[in-house]
Length: 441
Image (tube, rainbow, N blue to C red):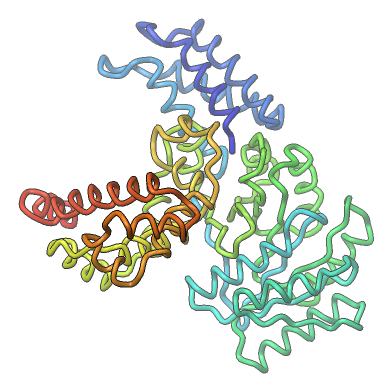
């Protein structure tokens, strides 16, 4: 995500490296490269031009402190303007109403149906809502079945009328059904087309008029660049939607849609979707996205993801075991499961400042822990609870059972021992005081 843009921007800032001060000449050279980087990322031409002009005016108006290098000052200005370009601050979704009604719109293939399921899952698990998904796509083959499968995965009911080909009536009936069954949120998945057409626009406009939704979200494939922005303009003219959802942001996207869409349609990006899993959805934070584009990581989002899986009672139990040197392979594999729940490993690592660029060419998949898990699961309950009994013959048996070799088993046990020692150090003596100080903050 944004890797090429990040590299190009970094190179453009190097023009100012070693310069004693910001001048009109070196700013012009830098911003020429910045503008090229934005255009290569498929950012709208007018947006790129206005962006660099704003940065130029702010850069030339800055009194650079002796402690701050011109290159650092330019990075700060570009960062702030990127955040402003994408909306400045996160904008929440409106889910007030009895029930609250959310209407999903977009072209076919943009990911509307998948995102509808993700949104229902998020609002159910994090906001305590009781949602109903509505299958109002009566044209696409298997659209209703897809939504039903998603609903079953996340434990959310799906309202469908397979024989009814009138999406307006389906939506109205679904809302009545929601009221009768105590549902406080209705998410309507509408039909898309391969391209914008009048029939499609008339249909979704009719649904809007009939159900009067509190929120209309335009779902767009981030990989389509400027085409996504042009489509958003057309939809906004007819629907006056409330916000944008960028899907497939984990794909080979250049970033043009994310950087242009807010300024072109003057509507906030509210969510981003990355991956197919039900929890692969994030609230869009412009400042954090600017951090990631400029290679600064996104430590706040990483901490938030960790907190979602954090159980205070379990943490206290674990801390006591570590202090007594009783941390075992059962605890170890439990921690691996917690990490896996946080999302794609490469995405998580890229949130750590300075790491994203280092790992961009590495293939880190969700099976990275597969070998470790196989080894641990090949141990007996007694061996997991008492790693000290893992002698040579036991290790050989574990290697055979896990499809690995003794060297890999030995390596894991050594790493486990080192981890256990480090963790015990952090919960005793000076390490304990450090942890107390961190908690106070």
